[in-house]
Image (tube, rainbow, N blue to C red; front, side):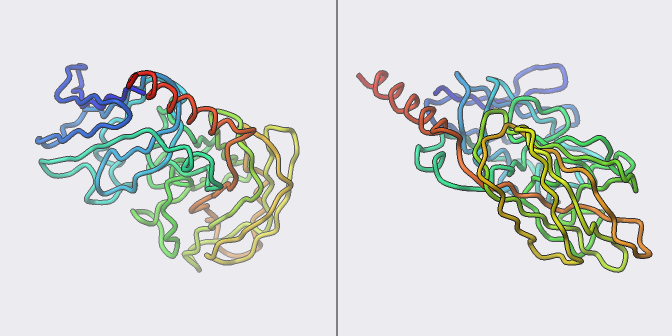
Length: 281
């Protein structure tokens, strides 16, 4: 797979780029300016290990489209990232094709620290029908960014999905392809007594099944096994708040555990290997 990383300015002018076969690195020796974007281009859809900033963990993600762009965060949007992310005058970006064993093993399929509102190419992707005051620290993406610290709120690393006190709030996690899932894990925000909590939540799977889960007043992982199934998305809804004084329940993280469906990951990996062998021949 051919991989290209780019930095482009607000007008689309390419400031720096690097292209490689199956792996590439880009070192950008300038400070970012508002309006600039980080772009990943791939020659075909597939799984990649992506690291767009050294202050954010590299992650295994799925490119459904051949081009993905992330606007370099400024202003309020910076608050949901590490204070060290996207700062300074030297930046190291990297991407590589995921190995077959990395794709095939059971993992948290909902992890993507590179997600944002505009993302339609890089999966998983989280979206919601409400986010508290439209603030970045309460955005849907925070529920899948891998940050689990939950005994405070309102700034990194205490980011969360906030529902703006709306009992009809719903969060959808899309995978961009079929995946097999067997477990769901919730990390509630637990800045008690500021926070409340949900005593029950419902999850509807794209297969049509709805599951209800009882939750406790706790910041610890709350794990629930489900009957193994193949899905393309889940929706979290039916959030029943506990009867306490605080009006502020929130979700710090959701993990959805499983593996690629019906060997889809193995097929993608095999295609990558075959492509590499053809090129070497």
